[in-house]
Length: 76
Image 1 (cartoon, rainbow, N blue to C red):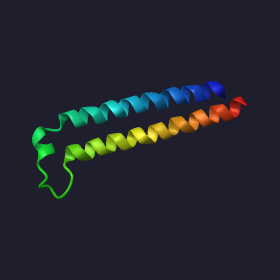
Image 2 (cartoon, one colour):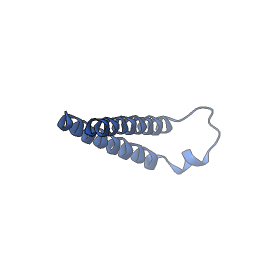
Image 3 (cartoon, rainbow, N blue to C red):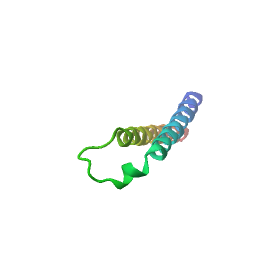
């Protein structure tokens, strides 16, 4: 059981890192014009991509925290 949870934890941490890198890359691809113009009513495609990547990061972090809590609960 512990081995499975540790593998699950490592996989969740890898997904956190992957989604973080995807979000940072999407942020770096935003142009200066996109950041300076405030005339848009809705979000650009790049901003939506950044948002999806960061929400995925939060989801994977929550999963990792739950797995850690289960590991601590099983250990005692």
